[in-house]
Image (cartoon, rainbow, N blue to C red; front, side, top):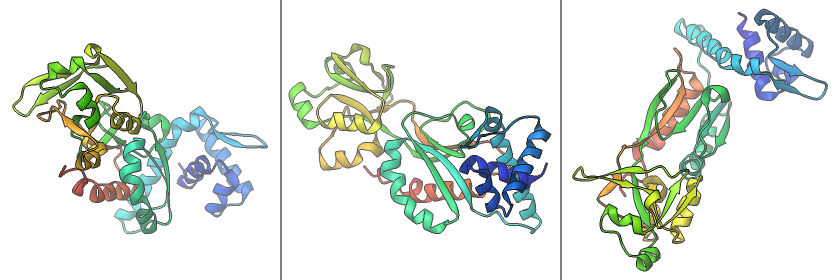
Length: 302
């Protein structure tokens, strides 16, 4: 299969402009259109929907896109192995991450990374709702758990210790729980759902953060909002240490039941589609995040 046509297809999905994609590869518009048509004929599927106004990616095109990218990466790796090419860091990197973590820790690092790799475009999708990597054609994602998906690979970025905390004013008004059983008399703030969360103490004792037993409960689906409402006295919440370590240090939040943490020992993982070849753009961005965040996590000493 002609990898230059595959490059043209991938570029066209990113720009939604066949002529512009062709120009990037040194092709005249008519030549670019003809090569894409030939690729579609070979595959027996329409990869791009064309109209006089716009270009859009078909369902078949979305399905084929990750395979096209992998074939290009395989070719680059093969050429590099024989000294006939180099794994250039260019193109577009589609990265999905939780918005709260990205705002606090990833966004400040981007200018330096962009300076180091000026030919690479970063396409960031930031939301506390998790995306499907394969269906969304993402190259890389940050998750707080490893999915049981054989098509994905993961590298650990950092630990994700989670603790219970509340505002001092809330604790002054409602009292400080001395044991996990005392949580039932308190207002509890939860992230996304009412599912009970298992807790474990430093000496191995087990307990539960159970909103069903709470006197009052609030559910939010945004991590930053959870921190904000906890700061305002909405109740006791479980938060990642990376999200609240500054507030704990300045006293605007206080750790509740300090001997307990979330039992499943979560971590932050960089997840990417499994492949025999990790593309240069994915590799350098992962290495950069691990170097800048994972090896000197700002919250590690809190």
